[in-house]
Amino acid sequence: MTVRLDVFLAPSELTPAALEHRVVAVIDVLRATTTIAAALHAGARTVIPFLTTEDAMRTANRYQRGEVKLAGERQMVAIPGFELGNSPLEFTTASVGGQTVLLTTTNGTRALLAAEDARAVYIASYGNFSLVRAQLLQALQDGHSVSIVCAASEGMPSLEDSACAGRFVHSLVDAHAGLMMNDAARMCALLSERYGDDLAALCADAEHGRRLSDAGFAADVMACATLDLYPVLGELVERAIVRVSTPQAASSTSA
Image (cartoon, rainbow, N blue to C red):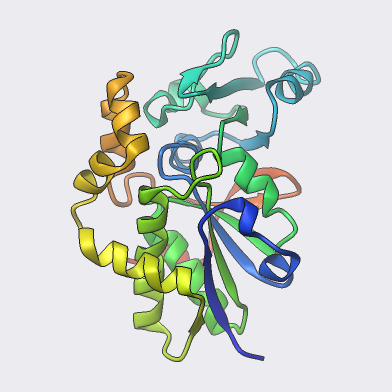
């Protein structure tokens, strides 16, 4: 069977064939998957994604006091009554260490749940690029096709997610010859080449990056544009994102 590497620019593009038997990486650079990586890196026990604030709040009621943190945003702003927003800089050992984080965001958590029927689902960003790249390369070498899913912005393709997907494509193609790819993967690779390692310029050019900066989250944008700032591999397992460790992840280096 032919091994493929395909990119989907928005969750609405996903079909059963894009998920079945595939290893999937979900990208929401600004900011959900970066924030999830930050939470796991800071020692959160798990991060559980939700579509709605109501679902997250109902689930919080099942936990003992002090075991769980509600986190999330709507239109970039922290949800009233939630302890944390969607800023990766908020997710420190002091705020989430040993905690279960219940997270709902405008785009990222929706994309993660849209991909949950895949063989395996990993959270991907610039912040944990090298570990995810190692895991995807191992999947390809084991004969599994890979789908990279961009969270997009309210259904529309986003510059930062597409370029991040392209960085994965470019790196994986260099290490695994003969891959079949869709056109979106090729376009994203070209976009990544356009910006190279200037991720700050990429996120500054992105519409959502500009909106975040204008809303007072410029420090978040810079964190999200920092390669391997949160070196952790997070996998969606039975609707909960947990930190996993593998030999290939432990030995990976930046591409």
